[in-house]
Length: 329
Image (tube, rainbow, N blue to C red; front, side):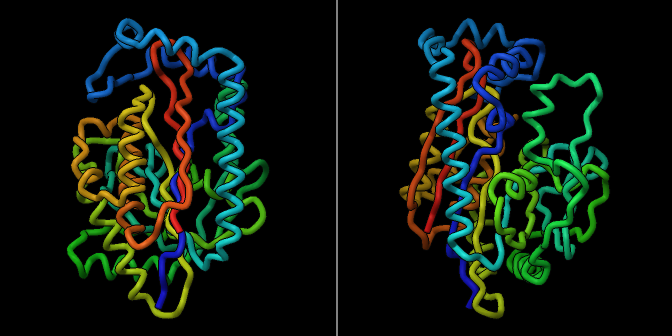
């Protein structure tokens, strides 16, 4: 019997490839017109956030604090890479999202499983006048040189599609990438940052976390995770399978209360707490928490081995990213 033996949750923010001195440059993007939401999902301006922000946030964007937090994030990424390699997985299911990398407004599937034999990651393509800090931050998702094809656990992917369809999930399916961009940031981050020495065949699952109106609701995400675990158990053979949530936690407005609620619920195996998160709180970057909810549903038989939470503020307005790292075994 195949089994999920490892769960992983990881942020994949561009800040994770940015030194502390680049954090204020990211903050300038926030202040210059980026679409921002408050903690209840209402659209606001940077000025609105600044006016209502806790004054103590200013202490958390001092350079020495940013350096310490950036170093902790880098250490956690290295730790997760070691955990994945040590698990000796036969396949890794990645729950990620697509941000107009493969799916545009002509067709955005709510849930899609990719089953091609391989999946392509391409070099970074940016305009020549793109700022160097932004180019460096985004480079963690892309190949440094030529394009590369990574292996896909295609038989497991097809099995998951079949089993999920049998149990009431109307799953979209693809076995070929339709656009030149390549696999996308949520999956490229795993290949480039978490598999430096040994590449595990993946099953890419794309949830539409970002774009209304067909974002899977939190309860459905948790149910999807439960169904994925059952589908893996019904797969032939004795494969060791991992499942990974790529993205989150709260951003671009950091919401420490929401992030800690998610992590504590994961640790307690409190599916109802995760399923009951108001959907309006899961928009913009915070929408990627849906990926964590899915993985939590799949890891009900596992225990949390470790977690770490690092609120990486980058402006006095409270913008930044709540960095979450977790392992279930």
